[in-house]
Picture 1 (cartoon, rainbow, N blue to C red):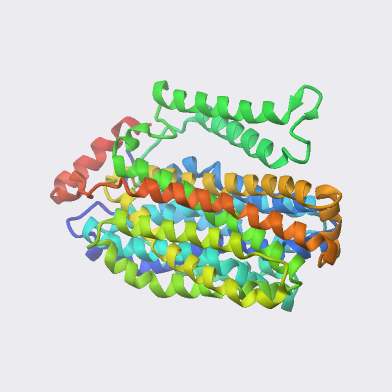
Picture 2: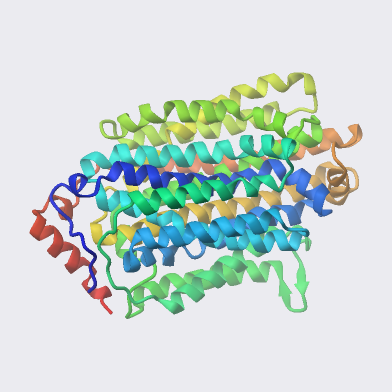
Amino acid sequence: MKSGPERFPRDVTHAYKPWPALWALVVGFFMILVDTTIVSVANPRIMQGLHTDINSVIWVTSAYLLTYAVPLLVTGRLGDRFGPKRIYLLGLVVFTLASAWCGFSSSIEMLIAARAVQGLGASLLTPQTMSVITRTFPPHERGQAMSLWGATAAVATLVGPILGGFLVDGLGWEWIFFVNIPVGIVGFVLAWRLVPDLETHSHRFDIPGVVLWAIGMTCLVFGIQEGETYAWGQIWGPISVWGLIVTGLVVLGIFVWWQRVGRGEPLLPLRLFRDRNFSLANTAIAMVGVAITSNSLPLVFYYQLVLGFSPTRAALQLVPMAVFSGGLAPVVGRLVDCVHTRYLAGAGLFGMAAAMVWYAVWLVPDESLWWRLLLPSGLMGIGSAFTFSPISATATHNLAPADAGAGSGVYNSVRQVGAVLGSAAIAALIQARLAVTLPGGAAAGSRAEAAGRLPEALQAGFTAAMASSMLLPAAAALVGAVVSLFFVERTVNRAWRATPATTTETANADSAPAEA
């Protein structure tokens, strides 16, 4: 086994100064999460600028989420093997360079390709943030650290559309990507100076598992998102939409089987799911991923194409979400360590579900009623503030130091799988509803969308489609709320109870099967 210059001491906070390190990591983490939602408000302008349709422009988000989600099971282990600091910095460089490529894209195909590379950089970076928290903060302080991590996730996903609106109106859609360049540089310098070099563990990487996971997820996502485009029929020759979806599910089933019977180190350590809270928290965060990613698209299209709002004005409709989410984050952080997380997460997710149903009821083609939509926006922000931190704290609380990279990789991967499936599902649902509610079907809507605000004759049908689409993220949030009610009281992992000597021995013993 290789090991870095540090071992796990009794009081890791004195050895590593974890708070400055965490603040440095938050810069890059915030940036990549903003990019999961910042494109939503720019979609209509990208459609006009690159002369494309609704399904193609949604692939700008789906490609990012897919290449973000699929490698996460591997990239968490890369942090264990080579050190989270090194992998974080590598991911930040890839992400920043890909952002420049996105901004200079001259076709929708080039933009989708650049977003795919950007997603790969994000997948390298994300697991390292949770890994550093798990490995440098003892459990009794980890709730506050996770509250900052969770608040960053909540605020970033809501701030994305707002920031995107100002940039698109003021400078053009390209600048939602160019803005990442200076932020990436600052984040690199801070992480280089403040993030410690942590202990490393050797791993045998599960190549068959990587291949099965990538094939299964790609088939599933492509089949769901492109289903309506091909009328749920043949794509090419013997390949059909349903064939792709079934193939994806079967391959993912084989992947899980391989993780159980393979002799090498599993890509997805199923033993982690023996912990009830880890299993439930992963299910809940998957539903959060579906809800957060899929709720913004119908709203942005409604504001811009039905009400005729500019990107900035459409983004301002989401300000109450960001204000309440950010303002309540410190309060929730203090509550996580003293109130059972089932109550916090359950209340937050029920609130998010109620907010999205409220939206569905109040979306009408009447510009004079825009102000009342600020109310569900505020409730959405309150709900999200009580969601991310409690779920993440529950998932990581019992992880041993040697499992930090694997556990954070699984958790972030599950969250992003939810996001990419939510993106694909909302694309399919929007197209299906437009085919039903618009005269001339979805094709008429796509042609009108590319030209700007919809004609009055199409506004009622388009609004009905967007309103009914909001029920998808509402249902996902509701499922997450029910799941979170089954969280059990958290315990302290034995590796953190131990003395310095036994902590090191425990970490070594836990990682021994992974030695090369």
